[in-house]
Length: 72
Image (tube, rainbow, N blue to C red; front, side, top):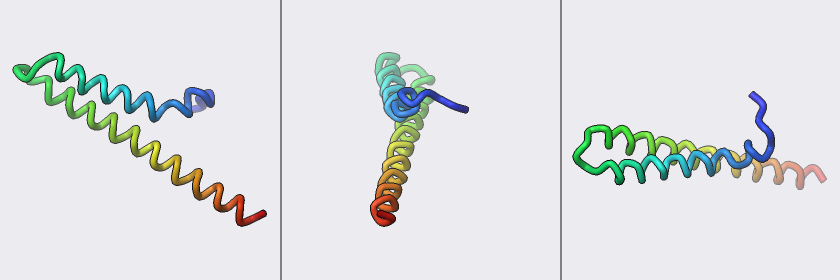
């Protein structure tokens, strides 16, 4: 699936914000409801996924720049 570059570059931030929104939603709902566990789990999963994408991209870009510098 092809995404425009501005959208592709912002996807990790979108995932992090989505996770924060789910966590904020769980606080808004309150501790009395059972769905709070689902909101918290989805929130942490989104945050972990966004952080993982950021880490993998930075590692790949770091390796790419090292390869480009060594071939010069």
